[in-house]
Amino acid sequence: MSNKIEFPYNNKIYLRRALKSIEQEHFEEALNYIEKVYETNKTQYVNRIYTFVLYTLERYEEAFEIASEHKTSYLEDEHQIFMFVLLLIKNHQFIEAEAIIQKETENTSFNKEKWETIKQNLRLEREQLSLEIERKRKETITKLNEIGQYSMFEQSQIINDAHLLKLKDLQKIAPNIFSNPFVSGNIQRAFLELLIKMRDETEYYFPWFNEMKVICPKNLMLFEQLHTIPEINKALENKLHKTPSMIEGIRGEIINDLLLLYPFVDEVITDVNYWVDSYIFLFDPSNQMNKKLKPKNEEQKKLQDWIERLNIIAQRK
Image (cartoon, rainbow, N blue to C red):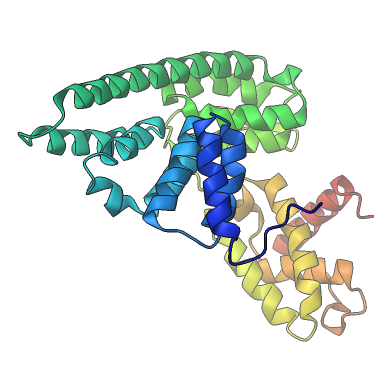
């Protein structure tokens, strides 16, 4: 026999089943029902039930997102405000939580015992977060020092976690990252960009095409900020406006090569038009514009040498 309940009785029956499941402490089951109700009924009442179920299941981020849809109603209700503040605390939005607590405790009619409990929750959550951050920091430092032992994917995850570290920690680790032959170029560049964002004034030796170049992160730009990239994009669009379907493919090849040249892209590419023409000719040799593409001066000869070098690395020839 089918359990399907036809409209318009769905919401009423689903809500009744959700409340029954909550009463029986079957919260996963309750969540299934209340989600169905919330699809078409986003009233304050349903929102609060939905939020409560998510909170009980310790799905704090989702609970906060749902509660925030009726934030004003929570803050204006002397009973529901506690739930909203607890969600702020669980989502580590401590400053806003403190502001609400301060405002409410200045009221002579506030529930002193309950607010004291909330304050204690705030202190404990802060301490726990601090301990977790310190644990993660130490773990990340250890992994960064041993990064060559990990796979490419794992190295990428470790670099992402490096954002938790202070600059002084990163400065100690940087020489190992840049000199380790088992760390990929992509990972080294990602680590360098982290130092650039932190405006690190230290000088390092950075591996670049079989030589070690001296760099100072503070004096460098992030890849996405390079002046050459928008110039290349503009040149591609101008030169291939009659065959726009080719633009993305060629742009992808150029960007991949620019990543290899980073952080010295602007120093290498001194003639954007010739650089772009070379790639168009490479991928569309029948293009009349580039039929006679040949270096005309020493500058273009150097660019051609670079392109041939990159072609070998990318196995395009």
